Structure formats: C-alpha cells, structure tokens
Picture 1: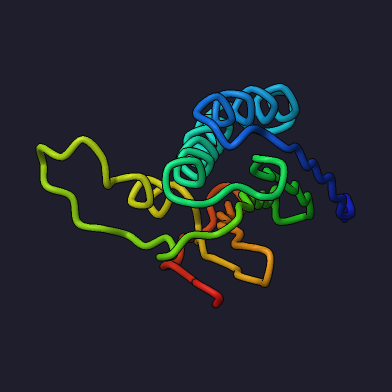
Picture 2 (picture 1 turned 180 degrees about the vertical axis):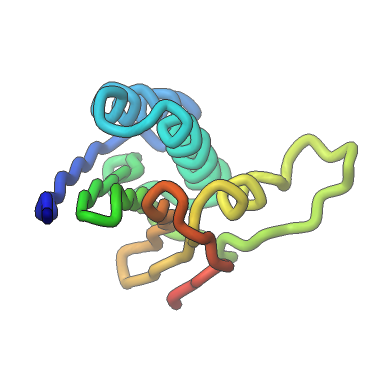
Length: 149
C-alpha cells in the first residue's frame, strides 16, 4: 500500500548575528518537534546551528544584514528526507572542512555537519552562497561530501 508523498517547506530570515543561530534553532524545533523523531531533530538542530554560526562568523550578510534559513521536509514511502539550507552574502573563501588541533577552540563545525548529515554542499550564485545539508530517510546509508560549485 502506498501512502503517497508530501512536501512541506519553511523559510525564515534571521539576523546576521550570533542571536540568529538561536532564533533559527528555535523555529526549526517548533516546526518539526511533532513531525520527526527526537534523535533526528537533535541532529537537525545541531547542523543548523553550525551552518548559521558559520554564516555569521565567516560570511557577509545578505542585504538588510540577514541570513536566510530554509528547510524542506519530503515524505515518501521510503521515509522522511530533510534538507536544510543557509544562504548568506558569501565569503572570500568558501566553506571547507579544516584540520583542527585537539586544543583548538573552533574548526570542527563542518566535521559535525559531515558526520550528522547524509551529504552537504555549497551552491553559489551572483547574490552569495547557500550551504545545504541533506538528511536521508532514517536507516539510509550516508555518502561523502557532495559540493556543487
């Protein structure tokens, strides 16, 4: 028996400021708490916090001093697939996984994203860049980084 497929999408704008990550996490949790398993929600919140935090620390804002945060939930017979996307004004150097010394205070964010998401990547256009992370249906295999560019 087929249950069919469905899709829901959200888009919010948050300040290009440390408070933007908190606002984005809160909104994501409000929207998805009753929709996805708690363990998946914890992964989504952690990844979104990293992506927004990176946008605030390393990239320029979009016009108006903001960062755009979007997520899409697709439900099918295979399960739920969720894509997070954070769009900013871009940076001189694009996001990349870095080596971090054990004593370093930062440098592990994209390791976290890579470890929790099925895949992630970067899309660039004339307005800036979007860093996205995709979560496959529960139980699906994870793949390596996929970057479009």
